[in-house]
Image (tube, rainbow over all chains, first blue to last red; front, top):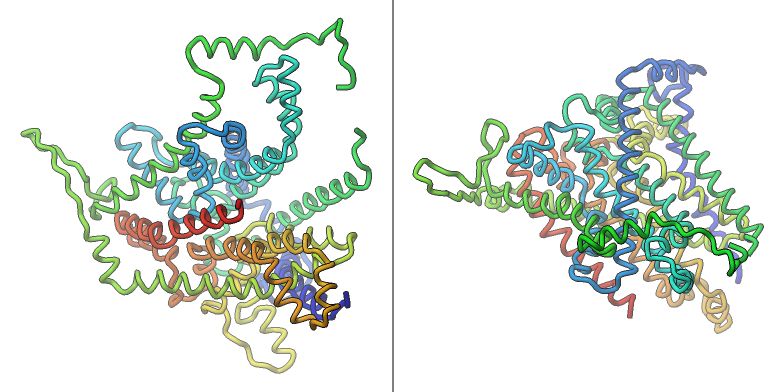
Length: 269
Length: 316
């Protein structure tokens, strides 16, 4: 096939569009001036300011904890859900479960957030639990939508899985639970890792749902960033963004290299 | 596991068997537990909340905690009274703000989806046709923004488009006066296209990379020009990718809150923002609930049905 000039140029422009704002964000995080868009000299003072900001650090620590816990809850429940949907072909309510678990994927955040807040308020009024809102309510809210993503990821891996391995283990006398932990789990481990990471990232990134279900004194990192950014430019947000982009870039780069190496040297069978 | 010595079998792990026996004795099978745990969690924290939203949409705002009227009240004589207000729903139809916001959200989401497709398709196609060793690097470049914070990427755009931002400074170099971009609908389109582009490219790429090159050669051999080949071979074959990518952009764009509130102006009406303001600025929880219910009925449920119909077609 003749190679045209259109595709490479269009793709190059597309990548410029994707990366130019990110690169300018990173560059201006090293700018001396408070004006985020006028270059006045190299400086790392905004990083210093960021690391000395207790509100920002507290919010970051809270967000990391929430993300780790809700991704873990989502991982356990999402994996169970995927196993139920893929391995148990028939049970009452299967269609309802399949529909409900994927519904958060198409549900706008504002609705999920509002619905959970109204639930928590109503529960507090009638049951007395959860008392007030804060970290716990954010964790519950995040685990619900992260669970949807974990289920989708694990489900597709389980569907591709060769059933004969599990059958062989059963024939050798292993109980279903043992088959799951000894055979199934190691094979789907990569899907579990990506499901957990996806949940972790999404939780860390969520502004809308957390804003609805958080309480006084429990502002997550996106909430703090949003209130700062809304008031105008703030170079310390640039510094924070640069750190986050750096970590993510290293992670994605590592994962890609790992995959490439895996492809270059096929696993010994 | 390399070998299995028949005479000395590995020690069986007894714990799991015992746990299973214990549960079975109480009449609980493992299968039941596996289904029940996620089912209960989803019922309590997903289905019940939606029912609560519907209930509260039928009450009215009042001062106090919680800031809405009770649906069910008991008086001294023991009568139970159920009070349902339809005022919130009537207001949705009579106040032009809400109808306009729904229509404008759908319009903005639709236009942005089309633009994202027009930009994403050539990118996905170029990556799919790229030499092998380039492909994984290019894919990585698409996935990278997807893992970085959504909020921070929207913030990056504000630095780009503000009056003294990067674009206007570049224009200034060529002597072009600054263009107002921030706080306009244009900025919202750019914001949606920018943040959702990876969601469009990935499904398109997955589809296009499977495209059989022989079909394209056959079309060219039969004398079709490249554009003709694209329109009658490539594009129809990539329809599933186009639909999947467009859904992944269109659906979240409709309920978007962050982009219109950071990039849009006061005149940018989007339903997610209206709901947010109703809740946070007006503290009218019942009205916000009614907006949410209407959004579910008008937008979310049709999309879910559409997806289900599409899945059914794909499975055939």
